[in-house]
Length: 301
Ligand code: IDC
Image 1: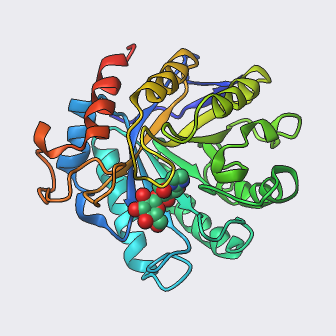
Image 2: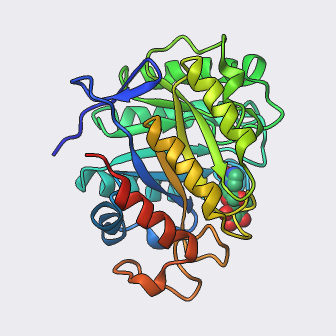
């Protein structure tokens, strides 16, 4: 089944009939760890977790990163394979240009232009592909860095894909969604990223989210977990519950960090688990079990 393109309407994401849509999904770890990018895994998330989306995280700047010393062709092959699998399973899929240590999206802007030009061209007929153009900018004010960057990248995508949904990161590790107020990008189908890690981020960040929502800013939670912002540490289910309530109350889409068996609390699988799919309760970490339960249980439709 070919999925319909989603459309931003006010602060909400909607289908072509105008019904509100809340996507829920799973983010991979960096694509240089492709171990769990396979049909069985994505199907488990779709059928057992209630997920409808997969986010593919292509790190730009880390050892093995796309813009540093990574094997570009291999990383693109893994990415396109992930897109193919998600498409076959009728899931949405986010192509995530995962800036992090590079802080400013401007550092690898020329690479980003080449990358999105190639991807948008190749994936032009994919109605299920969503582009996320800068994961987590830092020290990059929205008006003077992020928006000018987005204004260069978005037309590159729009050339081939005039209607795709595009997610733009916000400053301070995609927390400063309120920065966008009064200076939105002039494009109908853009949402702004908010990331939370519930053990670190609490009322202060939730208030920022509310402030932006009240100002009509369309927010997309393209990364979150209930552990701390390092991706590790304790799991805070109390703050987690407040975050997921907020997301559900406002129909905010959310993607869970991360699909791996790395030894840290944000991983979905425990470190010893190497099975590529077909996991059972004892294979999941504490955060994964809590989130799975929450995700599968709270789907409205
Ligand atoms: C973390 C991974 C960790 C990895 C680190 C650096 O969980 O295994 O060592 O990146 O490569 C983010 C980032 C995301 C982070 C995650 C947890 O978008 O890349 O992943 N996090 O720290 N923002 C807030 C938290």
